[in-house]
Image 1 (tube, helix red, strand yellow):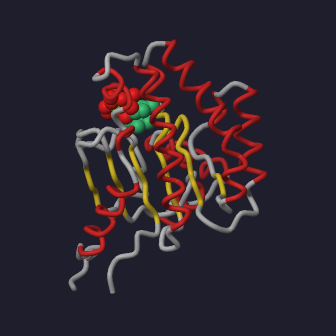
Image 2 (image 1 turned 90 degrees about the vertical axis):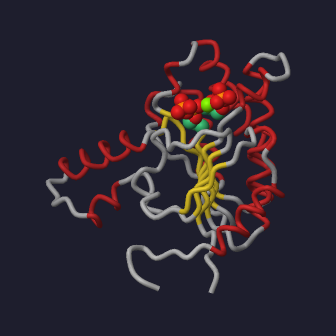
Length: 226
Ligand code: IPE
Ligand code: IPE
Ligand code: MG
């Protein structure tokens, strides 16, 4: 039987370069990138093999960027969630944020919580946005939860207190770089990694379909022998 792309995770990289190549401000690339998020989410929602789509939207390291870009990204995120609420509901898509949300403004946190709770009954695709997310930060926060509970540290107990225990099947990075940039370090332990030079604003359902086709032919052994 071929591999099921049950959980796809994407490092959405290349927005800034996409805009710069057109002589535009980096923020223009982020706006275009938000349209790709909409398209790829719709593609995955229509493909019943895909149960979960996790998108890296803002890392714990992205605060190092100029204030003006960070502020733009926060506003774009809030606008996106508000505009897309009806799309989530119509598409039966459940929104699940991961990452440390405590740092965001109260207005943004309220919007994130509203979309999360209003879509919590949706039974189709789970679209998980990684917001102020870092794999190391997630593992440290999880370890501290176990310490607070005075619980033993095991793979199973730690998994329960991570932001998500869902293993990634297929991890894609757009934008040409071959690195994880602190994304889903625990959950990607046995993910199949795919890298494409396509910049995120140019990525689309056709390219995702090609990657999934290739993914299905890979022999996944999980340390065993086939
Ligand atoms: C990814 O695109 C989006 C975020 C990190 C928020 P970039 O903004 O990193 O675009 P490049 O990599 O500079 O082209
Ligand atoms: C990774 O992209 C983070 C997101 C896509 C949100 P970056 O552009 O921040 O990664 P580096 O700095 O090239 O590793
Ligand atoms: Mg980048």
